[in-house]
Amino acid sequence: MTIGQEHMIADWFIIHFTENNGMAFGLEFAGEWGKLALSIFRILAVLAIFVYLFILTRRKVKFGPVFGISMILAGALGNILDSAFYGMIFSASSYHTVAQLFPESGGYAGFLHGKVVDMFYFPLLIIRQTEAPSWIPDFIFGNDNHFIFFRPVFNIADAAITTGVLWLLLFERKFLKGH
Image (cartoon, rainbow, N blue to C red):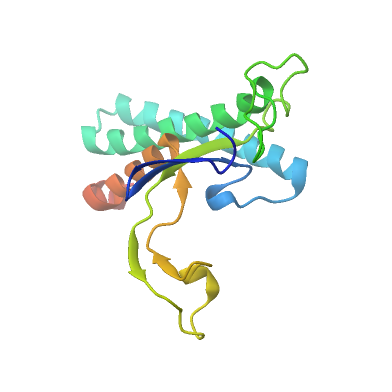
């Protein structure tokens, strides 16, 4: 797929190909050095989560907290792997070209400098306005004057992180208070 290309699965579910160069919601900082710092931070965070999870399993902590933290670990690891290797094995994507797997000239970026692929888009259209009131900021209704409740495009790793965090917040408050 080319960047921005979509496949409509249902009115509420679209496969939308995009590449995320930075953090959540496409945020990024400080160019190449910022990307490297972010990648190193992610690796250190995953190592810390792994050690914490190891300690929890040794202490025979119940399944619930271990499940939530495991989901966060799995999602973070998935995004790191994508960021670390995607740029090395694919050519650059654009709005007009499909990336090649293992191009002869090499990938578009070095180790830890790749982008993360996001593809799931669930635009929950709540309000369809013909013209949004002038006092409402443009980013809320967008250029097409439609209010979409959930705009982010995400991947399976992002969903795993979100599931793990929500699991801990909703079902493991007792555990979180004790640690």
